[in-house]
Image: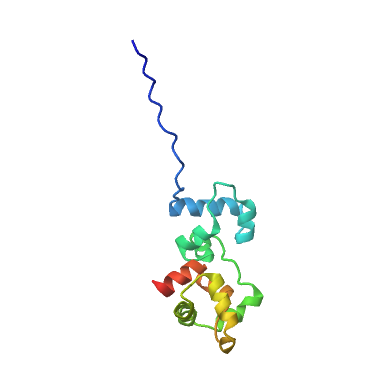
Length: 149
């Protein structure tokens, strides 16, 4: 009589965690710890390993401030040094700059954009810095999606 080994299922690999909008907003509220608002830096300091990352909020809701708004928290103020810089260009100009970079370099990575912007002496002052685009559009990936989508 032969003994058969019992079937042992293969170990399951953990897949990516998928959060509902409601779960994401609950994490923001929890990490705000009763405060009226929650900046990204404070969020990063308080988040645990299993908590979602700020870029996920930006992808899901369009911007960090929109996520705060939906969670019932106060939106974070724009840093003083960015107030004038970010109002110089329209959203259409921000998107057009990414599209022009793509046409001229074949890439829309943040590094390629900044290299193109700083290497093009004739463009200086006419092309928004990547930090401005990222701030205004919520994230670099969102900006490139709008420019290339």
